[in-house]
Amino acid sequence: MGSGNVGATNVMRTAGKTLGILTLLLDVAKGAVAVLAGRYLLHQNLYGAIAGFFAMLGHAYPVFLGFRGGKSVATGAGAFLILSPFGIVSSIGIFAILIRFSRIVSLSSMLASAMFPVFAWLYGAEKQIVLWGAICAGLIILRHRPNIQRLLNGTENRIETTDKHR
Image: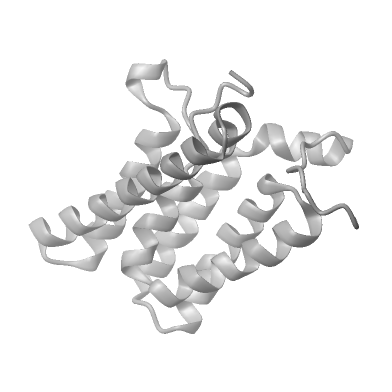
């Protein structure tokens, strides 16, 4: 339905807010659990970051859905919430500000993702976390290629607002 994407934004648009939020929470949990498992099994944050990347990759290109998955934003947020909590909270802050003014989820997601490695670095995250954060941001931006084209064309979807004063 909708865009055909399995991510929280499309689920919210097509199935409602409750299922969209549930999808968001499960996607965040998927990334967090992957990092915790990787870190626990191999005893280093680096392996947690790599596990998080592969959770994102599996979300973006799921075998059971013909390699047509989501954009990996929430899964990445869950992964890096474990590895750089302040970095992710700062990125979520950027997302919230951008979504408030632009009402465009894709633009807000890409810019917040791109800022994550900068925030992680500023908060003193290990170099490999910053590096894998940048790689994961690259994956998120790559997954948004059709959205980028629609942004350039001025046809990208905006989220609806119930604010009558806009």
